[in-house]
Length: 397
Image (cartoon, rainbow, N blue to C red; front, side, top):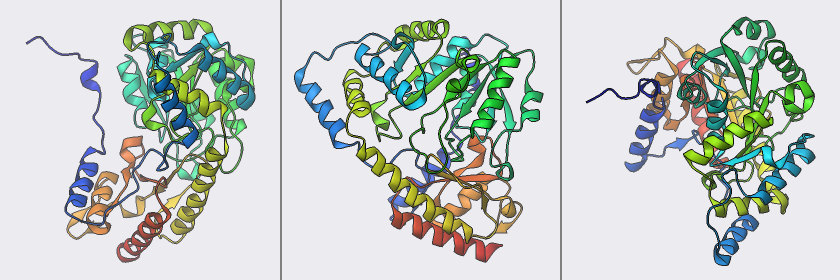
């Protein structure tokens, strides 16, 4: 047989598959496994959005739309950008895709040439390095730490920029840290991108899940930034529409034109019913969205109060999204019941064995001394999980 794609053989499988598989096996055995691994809201999609989808199904005529999405939806998204983000985008330069991940894929495919590099800021979302490699570029990682609030250092960032650097990808509010980038940090990144003629890919999917501070779209801070920024957002997180698969991107016309061409051949339009439902989500009743945000905020406080009582697991207070990232360096090198903790993957395994708690190891996010816990789960689970973690730390530190 002739060789398979060398580029795509570099794509790494999920580092969390083994722990997820083990957690499911333990649950199947009747064990009381508590999962803090979820990357999606645990609430149902708001009723008015669901009802609009059903209504649209019954109306019929739900065939193909334009590859870049319904004109009506793109107009609504353009109005949303103006109202929420102080951004003026032509609806023709908005591409609606099958989820924000699809939008990210299109963006990277549109700007990358062989030999290019894209800078990602660790901890980063697990798919960024693989999407970069799939586009034929090389991921270059800027490390941050909880001591700096997981914010990038200007000198360190500029030190990674070279002749092959094509773009910087940012994610605020951030998955996995929950950090919201302040305006000063975004301006620093934008100034460096302008200075070195780089694109900016701004992933803002958690935009409406903010509990402290203010969300800023980097493209809105300076016209120089806007011309080089691809702004990514979607319906999945704030609207509890993960399975509906609607994301969207807006960019300067030369970039949006290529993104549309890519999508027109790769997938054509995203799900038509979900597009009509998204119009309702963006224009309809907002109280259910605010109720979800308040619920997550309450859980966030429970998580922080619980971790304040856990010895050896420092964290930077999350101000957005629905994750907390804890540093477990104090446990590295320790042996527990015959198992030595050499990595956060080991820590994940031991927490499953000893506490029946499933977390996501930091290696998945380019952060080899941390674990991510999601509070997209009910309060009872959060409180019981924190109690188990507190007991574990008391016994083994």
